[in-house]
Length: 502
Image 1: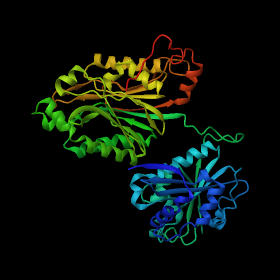
Image 2 (image 1 turned 180 degrees about the vertical axis):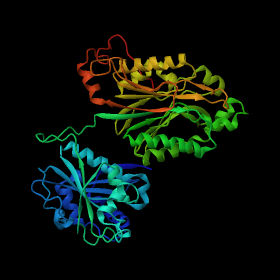
Image 3 (image 1 turned 180 degrees about the horizontal axis):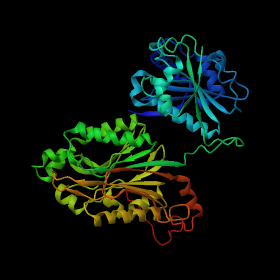
Image 4 (image 1 turned 90 degrees about the vertical axis):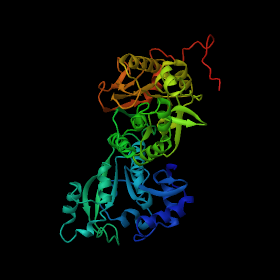
């Protein structure tokens, strides 16, 4: 599955119309081609859509209004000028949402949240004061005889009643400012009532025209995973989803699990030799990756699935999978195999070193022992890496110290952020995986813009938890140009170099 949030084009009109009909059961009509042409002409960046596997299945349309000249409490036809959009003002201060819908077959993917997030980002980029919209309350007709609109809304807020539209808007930080009467003609489900919804841009500067469109702060979520036995694959999936749900609720852009975090699933094969048990575990990897891809799409977060054994051309690798929230899949196989991994599992080393393009910039992946080889991360830094993710698994504190110390060195010498995540606890019924030691952390370069000790955040040692930390990519650019020392620029390339052979 491939998911893309982008600007709507006129070529999308057929898909848009089909999806609109399905979303509203053809009860509220569809947009005419002339209306879409006009919206694209007056405010093209405000017309958004979600494309899934080449088909537009969701959309958000909007205009800009001047809050001093336009009564935002007006009904829908007045705001939209009956489809002529005469209230649109490029110099206005408020974005008015005139449409959001998702095809019913795709609602489990939470595409509406992506559209709202994109709208908010555009609002901040354009330095607009707020986003305002009239929100339908489509379940109100079921309760209208016993509840007033205000009582109904209060019960939805307190979760005594479920209204999919209003509950979604509240969960996306919109506040109900007023109840509107006779808002949308022929809206029989809402009995033509609506809520006046508002989301405020806390970065709004009245004296400025616009802000930078570049996203500067990236939120990382690291899972310090407790090794535990599972009754089956579904229990394992439930535990993964629990953490993905929790971290995505914090608005994280990435979530990372540790190296070999799925090894509890080896317990049914504990009677086999270690290499045979690991091969059995590898037969589950493809299905696990597909499930994690679903979570990445549904919860709108990029997931680094720790690492898992992966069979390729008859050889066993230790592979990490980067499941993009767009549906794209990337992978990296551990290059440096420890003596223990070779002895017990006959693992093979990967042979590809590259950065991955994400919606939050360029990131690198190394697995545990790999971070102890500085050449790898230097090559990634030369390729533009800004954040290095290192899932690891260590059984003793001295093993952990090697990974931690090297990871922190990589952050300093490559002027990047490094995030490490490991497992904790005991796993008594899985051979060679019995004890774990971990303290997950996020490391930074060492200069005035960063923490004095180069540690952005760190977890409690040996306790299951989630570590959430924000990293500012602009600080890396400033460091690169104006830092106290400029490690990347000051290299003596006339004397030495680090070269990638293939």
